[in-house]
Length: 322
Length: 258
Ligand SMILES: Cc1cc2nc3c(=O)[nH]c(=O)nc-3n(C[C@H](O)[C@H](O)[C@H](O)COP(=O)(O)OP(=O)(O)OC[C@H]3O[C@@H](n4cnc5c(N)ncnc54)[C@H](O)[C@@H]3O)c2cc1C
Image (cartoon, rainbow over all chains, first blue to last red; front, side, top):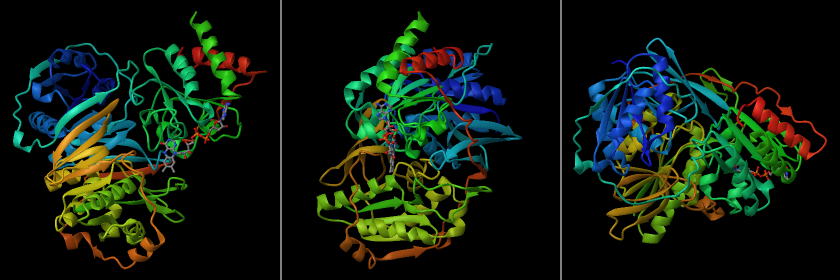
């Protein structure tokens, strides 16, 4: 067994950034990089993966893959994995990746390492670093046998373009339909241009200190100034109050995010909130209570009333942008 | 409807974690039932109550102390439990080995559905539901926020959380369902419930009794604490406007985001 096989995920007709991130990382770790791309009408996307380091892209394309159904995707991916016989399998730990990865691993008769934030090669092993106990500790984990199946938290690695074009091949896959028992009846996805919190590079988040749903408008305005890779988030207190939907919640019972910039407005920084955003690269806290625990995690803190700071920040950033 | 609920005992989230070698110091920890597992127990109880028939069996892998979480589930209303009480197996168990032990314990039970939390908040792996389903040869539906079962118990129609939205999935039973927050509001154990739980049957087994001999497939080599973050910079300024101006400058020049 040698090289890496990556699961590339497609959503709304585009390959997810997390898939490019793991492709770039695989290239850096060394060895052949193969990618398995599954979906309906996805063949045309395959060449994009080569840009980030894929030597070969196996395309599984067909109407039966229009909606993600675990069993169908596991069967398809496993057949590609059997052909490639990789030493390492990587996927982005998106909602779909989290569903697929353990199922694939169990079908291959191996373990899996979830939601890693760093990978390092030691001989033939990839040692994965992952947060445990709500980010209060890190575990260094390795697999006992190949393939070493690893899911990586989105935004953990940079995407890097490389020279050279990878080959694209249609994979011959046959599904055992009798085993595909779950049927997707309907899918409802919010029509929004905002990235999902788990993938956003910038998150402007609000907590109980926002005082009401109407005030989140100002966080949305701030996020918009940062461009299309920015979105908003919320603490559980804001979600429980009904100010924001649960899909915005960051934390232990919400989403785990790792953006380049996390701005916490009126959020105290409870351990369960920190669990969801502690691996953010830069943390800014705006809170009027200098003793709020969020300041112990923040790289930059503004101790003041957010209702004065946020509007001023919006106009200052507008000035900087010219 | 007969259901199995898999639960795990974990440190309370407020607990201070101290690392030691490849694990944590277990003294001084307050142990609780994994919060996501509470949704799973609640859903199983609601299904039984709705159908006015059936039973709820708890299955848990853990050392001696795990019995407390099992009793909590029984006090909420579950009928029976299997405690795979095997500290040696548990200490080394990764998600794969955990699923193998649970699968072995569940094989002897009657069930239409298996409920469990979407992840345990200690190692946050979120793997056991899918692996368990694979080992039992039944489908797994993860991240369930709504669960409905057909009157003849042949299928379930569930809503699961997906990125940016929700999907409605129909699946034949039996199947494994992993519970996401929002599925229900777990009940508290009542005092009579707690009294009754003490008399409910708990079948205690070792992994070897069940024929679960699968070793772990992943190993934790080391556990570390996160590096102490450098003391953050408190942005000075005469008023909010001055601080905001300085923050904008920092985002532009130091963080290079604007
Ligand atoms: C099992 C469990 C799971 C949980 N999961 C999550 C989770 O996923 N996510 C999560 O966020 N929480 C979670 N919690 C809840 C968590 O413990 C906290 O209760 C929650 O994070 C608090 O939200 P908050 O910071 O918005 O509110 P608070 O703690 O009330 O903080 C509000 C902050 O706003 C500041 N403030 C008020 N007014 C202003 C103003 N005008 N200007 C500036 N600052 C102001 C205050 O100083 C205060 O620091 C969980 C709890 C449990 C027990």
